[in-house]
Image (tube, rainbow, N blue to C red; front, side, top):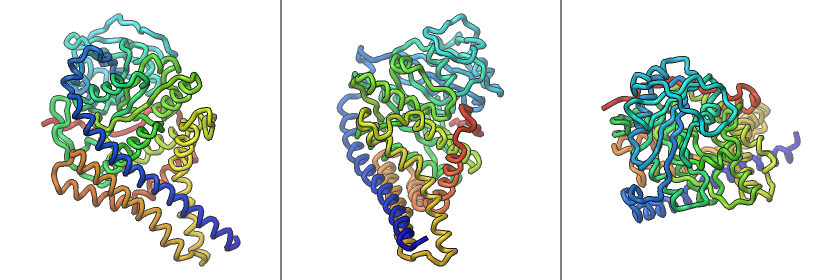
Length: 466
């Protein structure tokens, strides 16, 4: 390989990481500006005023559940305790092999009912429907195992309200979370979907279905995920939403117009990234129909979720996420660089392709390239220094900046020691964890087309009560 070719490869690698981290830096700036606007907007209309308005939209909360015996009661309690004028909770047990269904029957005094679906989608058979004798707004649907998307589609067919909220069965919602997110639909008639923030509750304390005290998780792997979530939701999604480029609404907490989702056929089965794929399909449908619409993210409504506490489980989760990302992008490849789809086709999708889906491939190959150069005695010291500066140091500075905004503008960790430890975690995540994470996602890319539509396996921890 000639020196000119080596120089060209080195330059491309450096330009790639410069562009990637420069976007993150811009995202931190935009997020800071948007958070300031958000605080002023939140103060302009109180939640009590929203509760008293007559034009709120009732919501069906859909809770797909598989193997959630340890956490399902606490999660459902948090959903039932939401401050919202009118809503229903529909838990869909997707053929769990543990005691999830029995835990629900015991906790909520469930009895069989003859309730029938209001709409029809192709799903796995329903084995039974239960209602609570104590809580009229709670319904539990028991069905054969078919995956998360199939469970959500069953929930859609039993839902009765114009908006539906898709949440994970291992998650908790702040009492005002649904009200804050539904506010977007009151203020914007064009809105078809909106997502809220997701935060890590590992180490937290729960009381009456709410997180009452947030403590720093015990392990390094959990703390790194706290940093990741803060960066992804605060900087990434806030920025994409502000620019009209949002492609992802977390499956843990999203609010949708039910009619629009039914029009596109519900959630797509056979994919591990049904949440992103649905948002992409909504974008595609609306633009092909030439309908004005918006899809937004709101940083204020908070959903709390458990994160993996071991590299084995985290690796399996990130493997699914990477395959789901590729599946969603590939399913809608017609939109790539296509001006018919506006900024989604020309900006958002190319970004996700180049800087999300391909990022681990380029990073791993970049490390391999340096190793080969070192073994052959052709490694240039200037290139190594610039690579470390752009790929690691620059990324570390951006991570610390994003986390600092999270810690000082949105106070969740109140103890100074916890804040310092998280900042140290942000400093250290680029040295070891980042390379491992890139390798996991690189391997996942090589396995595309395998293990479609399966539930992920994660060890649940019973939420600590206070």
